Length: 358
Image (tube, rainbow, N blue to C red; front, side, top):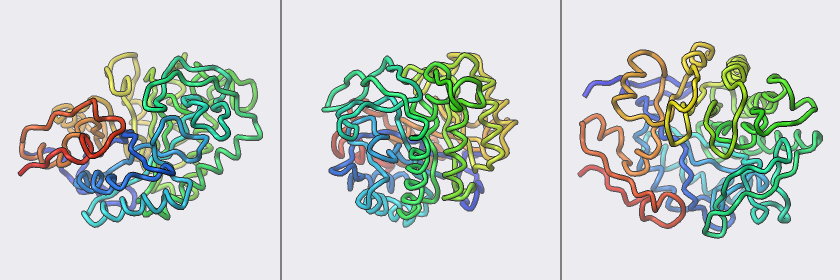
């Protein structure tokens, strides 16, 4: 079957063998020390026929963790665990980048250093849940980051980026979406600060752009992407004027020449049309590649690629259950159904045991 989805694409120094991207998918299967599970070597290796793999979000520090059993990228042991993953993907001719994560207020005291409060732009508790102790629990009351703490958070991003490169990743993706720390600073529903990081759009966007600059200086702009979600209500986050906010952010990211923006269109994992937003405006403003995400199937992917509204298409749940998704789409073969009960936590079941085509 002919489709632009199967065309090669030059993304910075990488030549992707197709335009299909495996979206970052939290699976909560890290082992002791928040090291990637040895099964992750098979999991990502099985999916190496994607043009680009984006790993599950990985915390840049203990403070950045918000859910049990998610992998980190701040210790030598974590770097060694990820190196096994990148080696397998590269052996199979794939490309893989690591998603850098700080959850901000979407955390629980039991996961934080010394059982402290999670950090946020402002001390506003989200109406949301996190996954700790094998169950879903209310997120904890956060504290506002002090102005003098912010450079330390940026340094954590820089160290995590250096660690990702040491682990053999082809690049990194900054998680600026879904109601986590950088998104919390950007959107006025969570940010009530009155200092240089609060108030007008320029101030609220400051941390996301500062982190993007710092990370790109370590990895190279041509190996740095970012994920944004302008209107998703995920993790109890809203903004009064998302179009103006994200137009400004994307202009700033374009000036930094990051290799791509990865845009969640609509509600993360949910409806695409929950709020008015002009994604084509972001596409026009951005000098690099545009990865479209959220609710894409083969038909919609073709429509968007054929009209040049995106360069690459990210698939999420379809990649959980179809390790050979590209091959199946190319042949028009049936897709495996996914089992939601095995998405978060567990062993090989629902992780590495989905069959490829015979």
